[in-house]
Amino acid sequence: MSTGAGRVSSFGDRLAAAMDDLGPLCVGIDPHPALLASWGLPDDVVGLRRFALTVVEALAGNVAALKPQSAFFERHGAAGVAVLEEVLAAGRADGRTQMILDAKRGDIGSTMAGYADAYLRDGAPLACDALTVSPYLGVGSLDPAVRAAVGSGRGLFVLALTSNPEGASVQHAVGAGPDGPEAVAAAVARQVRDLNAAELAGGGRLGSLASWWAPPSGRRCATSASTWRRSAVRCSPRASGRRARGRRSSARCSGPPGGRCSPRRPARCS
Image (cartoon, rainbow, N blue to C red; front, side):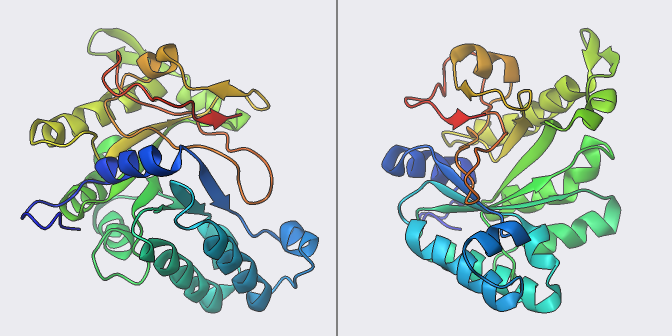
């Protein structure tokens, strides 16, 4: 993704521009069976395609980001993945709305490199603007995805603290950090911050990586200076908002310490 001046445009810069122009809303595309039924659509590839492309047609160019959940397409097999390809291409055609693929990929070595090639390469059938990834095989295991994202001007949302209660036993566990005891989720955020540092040193408003923080289930929050300081990551704001199924996203917005990237508008989440 070139700026036309020989520099690859960063996902952070594009997301910031989209939020400036279109507001902070990110709409999830989660075509699970109950949602298809509520639309009067069959739980098959025909219903999947009609639902997903209707959402894209209505919202691409009107919201900062769309976030299809890969699992709801994969459950329909190869034909469902083909619909996901259509959705990603259609959403990206506008050039302003950013397509965030929620796949939460995480693996090691050549397998992680394969995921990076599938989602973060120019010309890949499933190419997206940003991908959600899991660091719980070690943040270093994401290196192939990090290199691919930075090299192609794409982004990563790295899970740090998730909303499911089962995650607490791992994410809240405390180990030795560089400045004393540190929770695992905080260590993930710190390492994401460090990965962004070199990219920011080379120019650009925002880096390619963001850590993903979720508040307790059922709690609504708005981005505030304290939220951004708590995240301690200099990165793209998480443009959270209503999912297509009518509930709000549970991901917390994350950004740099202090006010450098403090949002002008609150990003709504719950």
